Image (tube, rainbow, N blue to C red; front, side, top):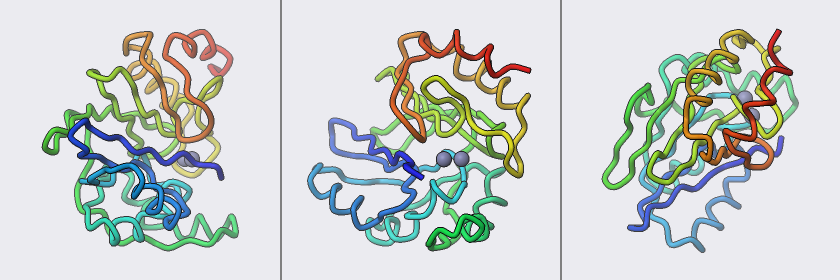
Length: 197
Ligand SMILES: [Zn+2]
Ligand SMILES: [Zn+2]
């Protein structure tokens, strides 16, 4: 599925892992080279391609998993979705904490949790005002937006999430998506009209 897993690391080396979707062994191996002290696993949403390496990484790193309340239904069913795609998958155990809208803080680590549903229930984007980036999950991509033909998706909700939560961020904000390359808010604003119906 070519899903992007992100490592966010503070200068103190405290770090979070976002959306470990697959290839847990590769992720853990790479982490060793980064001098990071992982404090938590955060999930933008619960599609199976974003949560497939959650169980292996949380056990190896001994950290808690954070997920929005409204994503819990899909999280619990993610093994069924993986099965429909014929993908090997390890069903993760229940998340430890709710990743709901507002400010998220753990030690030096600080992110703003922006509710961006539409592609999936309980989808969130993770914004760092200080560093000028947002992890947009599968809500917004370079030259694209998330699919809304999936169970629990809603097109109008996604458009509204993008307009109210993402396009209100500073234009220079770098957007790191769940799939594909990075972009910026400024670059994507003119593209949205193509997806509005
Ligand atoms: Zn998704
Ligand atoms: Zn995805």
